[in-house]
Amino acid sequence: MKRRTVLLQLIIENVVTCFWNKFKCSIDQAKRSFYRAANCISAKVGTSASEEVMVQLLKQKCLPILLHVLDVCNLDKRSMQSLDFTMNRLFMKLFKTSSVEIEN
Image 1 (cartoon, rainbow, N blue to C red):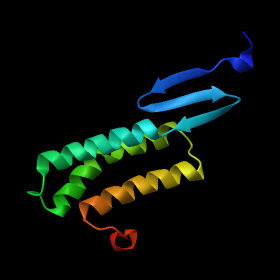
Image 2 (image 1 turned 180 degrees about the horizontal axis):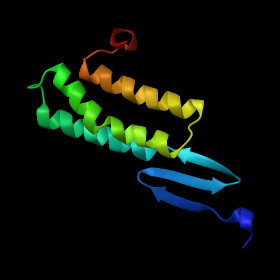
Image 3 (image 1 turned 135 degrees about the vertical axis):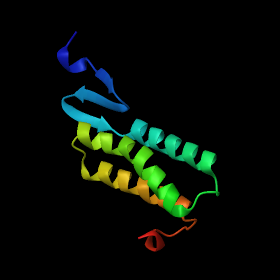
């Protein structure tokens, strides 16, 4: 087989890396895991916890999932914006708002 036509995929703790002429890092699996963990916490705690408790739980249990991607890969601007969007959507859901400006 020709070397250029071989596509190797390695799964490294929720980060899929593809080698084909250059390194590419996909953060989709990490975002799915992050949302899954956040939804789990939200379902278990519900509305009985204050916003401060929810933020603390999300910070301790969910944020490391996204931060692990930063340890493994050097992300481009688009991927960093995607992670920023992920966090913004979570806080918009938590604070029941539809505007990012209110959240900031």
